[in-house]
Length: 208
Image (cartoon, rainbow, N blue to C red; front, side):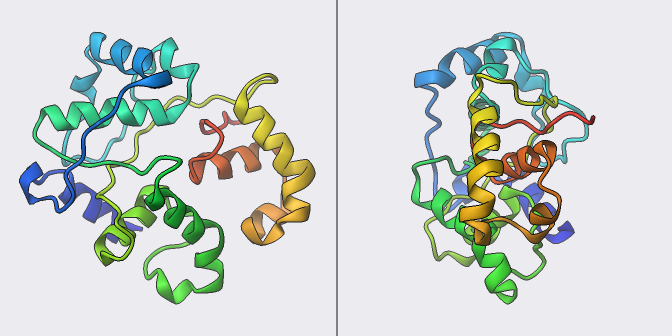
């Protein structure tokens, strides 16, 4: 929504000491090669604090191989070096679980809990509301990145997750998927949903 986007812009233009929950960017594990390649290529020049991104961020091959979450870690480091502290929740964190529940179930069951949001709203918009509500221990999220599209291929984690959702999830756990997806469960639509909820290392699928 416009309100949430404005909040994200304002939060990411504030100095780090104004943020209630300072964080430390972790770039270990599988994300390290991606972050290092992005920084070495001067990628931080593409990350502008306080601005809505309107163009795609350059994607090193090392990042294409590990998914969009590692690009988020790179962007967080760029912003932190500019004195801006933000952190988009990642899998395994309690904030991530709360945001995912809100996107998968909460918005459908209790839409009045999420004013200004819809089931098409970004992960970051849901996290911003959790942060603003001060209920779930969520830090302020970084603005979402615009990344090149990539339709999942066999052998990739995203392809496995999309296939599982189409063959099992949509039937066995239909309450965790939006009605629009149940009506049109194409591969591209399912991948787009997994990208939206930050699941399965999925990028946004390319147009057919």
